[in-house]
Length: 598
Image 1 (cartoon, rainbow, N blue to C red):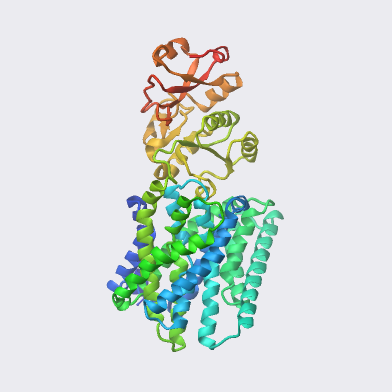
Image 2 (spheres, one colour):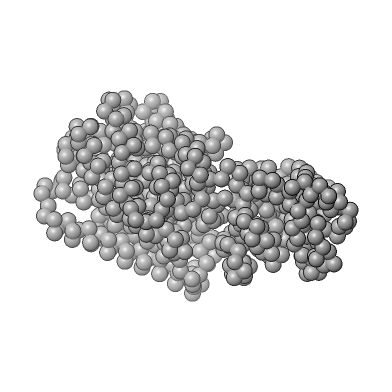
């Protein structure tokens, strides 16, 4: 018995991590593989039996995992982003959620044939979308404009709302007719408890950090402890207020200005990966062999109705008079994958319905998992091409993400911005970030090694990465970190200050050498301090690249090339561009050459 449980527990971790790694390699939504592996290991092979492994602890463990995941999601929500997309996001989680709830409940009753109470419960559960699915999709697609932040905010905020709706519906089902004032009071109580508990937990953690009452090595564990306390306490005071509490806690900690929480964000990112992997495997493995196979053609019709009717109507109702373009609305209407919260909530309420003698719990879980699998597959495989078709993603993204924000980097970024190319600077120096913003250059204060930087940075239009910090090892690691997102051919870094074997030995780990051999951080700093200047030179038949080189012999460093199609190319050692007539060079020239024209 002990060996069987040990093998089952090991299989959960091995399959969970393997599914995420394989999803990364194949560029597929990892949740699809997690569900597939869980179903194969659970109902098909019987290798993992969550009921035997954890018994009555299964759903409390799942609930705590979901709480930590939503807390981590709350940490990625910023007021700056809310000011830009808050109106549309609020309408989606209110008006949009109401439309989605009503239409989904109606479809569950008339298409699936569920009793009205069960149909309304299923509608409440399927109101949620999946931030654990949406956010990785957005990283891959990188849509321009506000649609990315709107979808992220909707996905994170709608989860506790959907859970609270499901609780209210369940109370009606289990208790019979409940007067409307009682329901309104219960909802108000849940909202108030979640809000106050979350703020209190965040204030406690900030106070502990500000007073240095917690040593560095215990800060992450103490934060996790407070997340668990906030979730359990809020749930104890009001059913399902815990998810709201942890989301509020994360949001409050991310937006306070008293202490830095980047190390906590990084810890939660790593923990989230393990929790998502384990929870999806456990939930998929807990399905019974006949759960999905018992679903008929009506279930397929139901899912199609959700995708083609419910989501578009909810989006268009919520975005009336918001000023969003038709293409943005169409993209929002085609992005509503369900995820871990829908799976967890449906499983928990199915268990409660079974315990109270209400039939239909198995159908609830089976339909929810079918919706999760189908929506993740459909949206995951089609959202990218649709974004390109709607012109929300540039076919050739020419924008530049600079990792490092020294004064000369800011000058280069400003020059490119003035030429019409999107730019963004990421730095962990508040001075550099504030200076960039004052100079009119978009900048984000973040650690470049943190996964959260992908959530904080608006990546729309950015297709090239220039690692230009003074630390060569950091530049190399950043290139590896972002390689999958931008592609190895669009990762550039400055030449190493070290010469010889040490620099060459790690060539396979480096990005392309930026600008040219020997063009180091120290050299560029010296050139800019020496009053060298950026200059744009239009190449012509009379003044081609050869003539440029002859005129500015050792007096210019070519940096970028703008070709006839107005696309930006970066000079580098491995594959330097070939300048031609009609193109424009951006170079760094000596002071005495600044006034010359080509």
